[in-house]
Amino acid sequence: AQSVAQPEDQVNVAEGNPLTVKCTYSVSGNPYLFWYVQYPNRGLQFLLKYITGDNLVKGSYGFEAEFNKSQTSFHLKKPSALVSDSALYFCAVRDTGGSYIPTFGRGTSLIVHP
Amino acid sequence: NAGVTQTPKFQVLKTGQSMTLQCAQDMNHNSMYWYRQDPGMGLRLIYYSASEGTTDKGEVPNGYNVSRLNKREFSLRLESAAPSQTSVYFCASTGGYNEQFFGPGTRLTVL
Image (cartoon, rainbow over all chains, first blue to last red; front, side, top):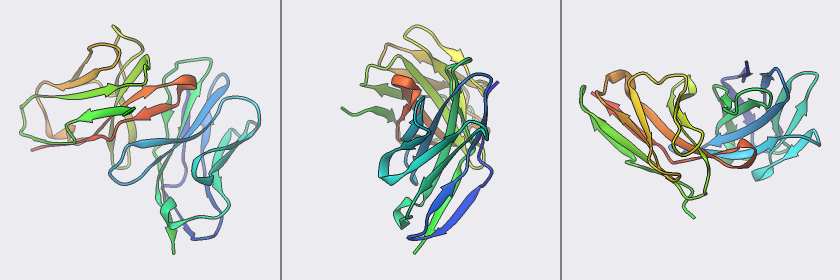
């Protein structure tokens, strides 16, 4: 079985500061990992993914995520937050040894204060 | 290239009424999905279609039916709407390595 956890319902950060949105996962095989962003009244947009290779993955809008196999984590990061980054962020995982259907976390609301 | 489109954007139903939510994608994807999003619940999978001609139940299929009309189109039907089906519904399709592309959503209110 596969699962994903986003331990924080909300993350607050000041504009210009670095941000981290946490994600941990559980799979029986190897993971495919994804981050999505949802702006108000919009659908989810794909940000980045880890399939294999370099543990540091770079994505859209200056975001990056680090795959840590020993800690089963895939935290989303950005060196300098913008007010426009305020949105809902979802982590998702797919177990390459199981179903091709991804499992989504419950989402983390990121609020960037001016 | 419109990506994933959904109609309608908004709908208000009375309890017991029926309706069909339409979804289409122009990316030649094989797999398509219907989710519902409720506050604090994240995304929950209702039904999915791995390929044209196949459909399978997801986590919360009760009260819904689907039709994969062709490779492009995947519709979701509520036969007898209930207030518990008030939600935002998203259609998605899958490209390479399973990143999903989502439609803009349908906001449904059942009175």
